[in-house]
Length: 309
Ligand SMILES: Cc1cc2nc3c(=O)[nH]c(=O)nc-3n(C[C@H](O)[C@H](O)[C@H](O)COP(=O)(O)O)c2cc1C
Image (cartoon, rainbow, N blue to C red; front, top):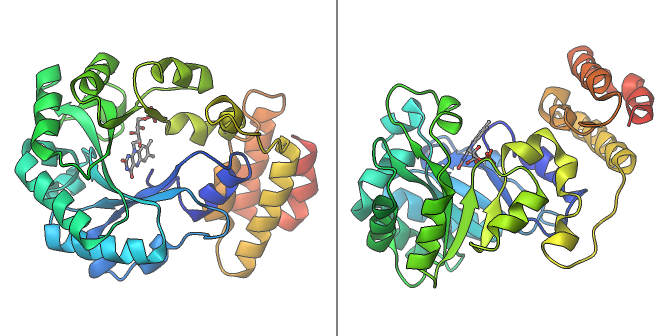
């Protein structure tokens, strides 16, 4: 998620779960090829796997070039964004508007697959504008799929391409999980991952009766501890078991180290606003995090922050 799942946020999540698949923010092909924004592609090889990079673009050659770069960096998966409805993204002719052009999506996927052996996946919506019917999604997938495209992530809402902001496009169109379940029935060989409005592990387990995977966005970003038992409940492995205080201590040290390397608290510390969510002091904790960022004084505030969780 843009402005959210950067390298720092992913560090935080790796203190909470070792198994959940993490995704970068969308990085556009233009930023990589022309903007030389290679720093945005950095990830921490020792701790971040499994991790996927998400690309935004619609030029098969550029997507192939970026896939080569991402593959050489060691990403475990390269995901093509076919779901972002923002006007800026539409001007670049990528994101959700690509759902109207399945032939181009197919070309993009094939170019990316030819460029690398790293798995290529896509993330799309159930449809665009007035096409929120099961047929639209199933026909779209039938047109783009090939034997090497093994996974499709579907945000279970249509994207309204005119008149709604990206934020409204995540709230106003109703969630239609049934369309995603039916996609799985139509293409049982595909790994179908459902996304949109999924709050916690309990919710996730219900969806997993019908599809192969779940993707959670806002809920864990706003309340990171909800994924603290993902490893045991979903993957049958032992949870890391770090307490909120242990996580916070380690993350604060990380932020201090990052600050020494020039990464401001506004980029690093902001990810812990929700760490105390649902516990007493949650509001006071958020306030102190905000003040610490504004005053740029983590060293002075760290003991107070730790004592609040
Ligand atoms: C701040 C923000 C940034 C997002 N950025 C991206 C993005 O870069 N790529 C993407 O595929 N989806 C992005 N999304 C959409 C989420 O990945 C997800 O599809 C959507 O929020 C619905 O899932 P949720 O209800 O679990 O949050 C973003 C969402 C938010 C709130």
